[in-house]
Image 1 (tube, rainbow, N blue to C red):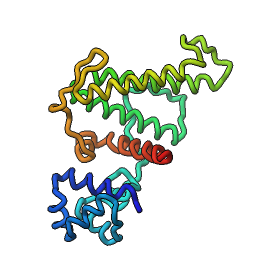
Image 2 (spheres, helix red, strand yellow; image 1 turned 90 degrees about the vertical axis):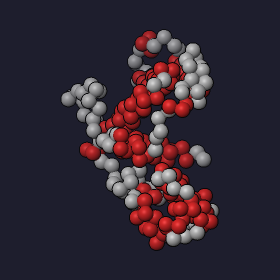
Image 3 (tube, rainbow, N blue to C red; image 1 turned 45 degrees about the horizontal axis):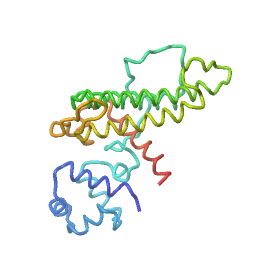
Amino acid sequence: MNNDFPRIITLLRKEKGLSQKQAALELGISQALLSHYEKGIRECGLDFVIHIADYYNVSCDYLLGRTPDRAGATIRIDDIPDNQDAPQKDEVKLNNFVSLNKKLILNSINIMYEILAQAGSKGLTAEISAYLMVSVYKMLRTVYSSNPKNPQAMFSIMPEMYKGLSSALQTVIETNANQISSGKSADGFHGINVSSAPELSPDVISKEFPNLSPSLFNLIQKTEEKIKKFS
């Protein structure tokens, strides 16, 4: 059974503001059957996959989680805009794999900061920024330390200590961010005004960030594929 199909058809229905009863009526099936499809209790046939894809105006590949693009397009490196704020060095030639991942990450971060600006929370922005900084710090040290000749004096924290301490710091930062995002104070910052938090959905993100959203959706898909390997 496809695990993405139930989640995606539920998302699409809610995104359109439809009740199960209304969607089932328009799809020509019973509400009970649609409920089973959305919960993953029953598996539908190919004809219904095509039918519901037409109903929501998306591709079958999107419904099945094969692509994060609603039209079914496969992302190409040339389709992703460069982050113009990032320093460019002509002499550095990244291969396609590295360049693609770089674009996915930078464009997704740009979207996140735009959303943070809409949220208007200094605390949430500060905590998320701190989390990203620690992530870069940890991975930079991993790459830096791959050559034992590189002087560790560049860093003030001992090599045998930084991994555990930085991971612990990230846990604290993530906890603070979760507190603030739920409207509670943390780390000296006031909680976000939950009632005025940005209303988001894949459709909203696509419309607000038409050029960058494919990067975010692909980053989500790639990350969740890795997560699922542990579940």
